[in-house]
Length: 297
Image (tube, rainbow, N blue to C red):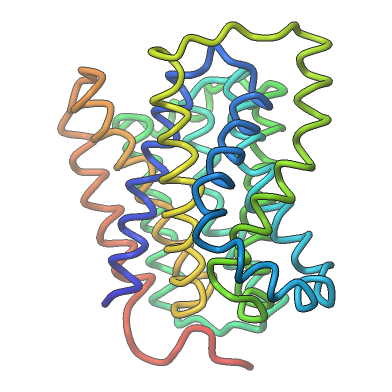
């Protein structure tokens, strides 16, 4: 039960990531991503710094999977999302995010040889359908009228990045201590993003920061999606498997919709409520108990 509750919290924090990221959209994407990981690094350094130094030989020995985890899960996934929102609508982003569980499941089946029951495949399809119903407010044919642009291509990179990260968590994260690896990954992400954000400032100019306007949002991004949610997600993936854990990400449009209704005065319609119920049923079916879905073929 605990891993499932963890994934519910992950979805809530990531829905907040979307809402806060949209609120900070006046800042360029690399700037948001950079200060996000800087804040995360500063928060966890006092807690895990000594342990990370003690385990430095371990990190050097497994630097390749460590770098893959850092690039896909910490440095670039949210950078891609923030960049996509510069060019495309939040509706398009939400539609494309529903592809993450399907892609993760496909990669799990192909690379990790995970075996899923037929009911779990139906559950995944049901949760995706419910998410699309929420996004389109019950008008699924509206999907055919979505305009495709460069932002959608960037969002596809985000989807691929998170799917690969989920597989890498299952395959390699057990090699590292839970907290010190997060410190090392956020530290590496700072080093990776620093030259890119400098290039962004040289190209676009240094953005104007206002403490009252930007600092609360950046603190939220640095603490909850970057640290708390990532710790919970990593643990849940190790317990449930990449495909079962990622099915919960279909809750994202529902949670984002709820946040928009509560804080942004968005309108709640019957179609959105019906879609939310369908998503919940689909996730329950996709994560149903029985034989372990990570059972090897």
